Picture 1: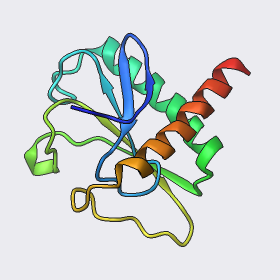
Picture 2 (picture 1 turned 60 degrees about the horizontal axis):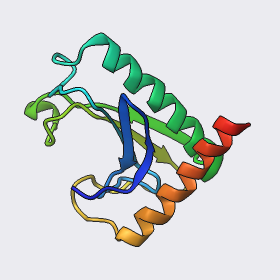
Picture 3 (picture 1 turned 90 degrees about the vertical axis):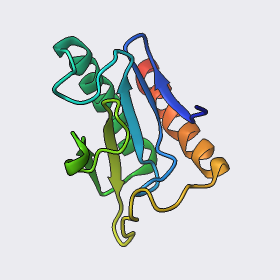
Picture 4 (picture 1 turned 120 degrees about the vertical axis):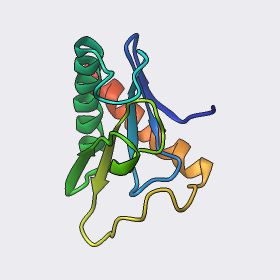
Length: 128
């Protein structure tokens, strides 16, 4: 499935959520197979956390949110709709309400632009 990549390494893949709650809503997935946290082995889980932290710093540096929500859902009763383990990074901005997740697909060009901003911040952090 096409995605607006923010970051990739041998263990993880970070990309823009196509139905974002806010500008910069990013998903982090392990490349290892796991439906939920109960299936996720410790090492891939650790790699997801490392990438989540890296991308959170890049979002903070580049998009300047006033807060950040990290969330991860397990099972349909918890709201999980995609059955591959993933972490959400949701930036929060003062005076900008969060949208409902899963209601509207964001414009692809807007996602691509935001992905490039975050991706550049990751590159800047890694080279600095």
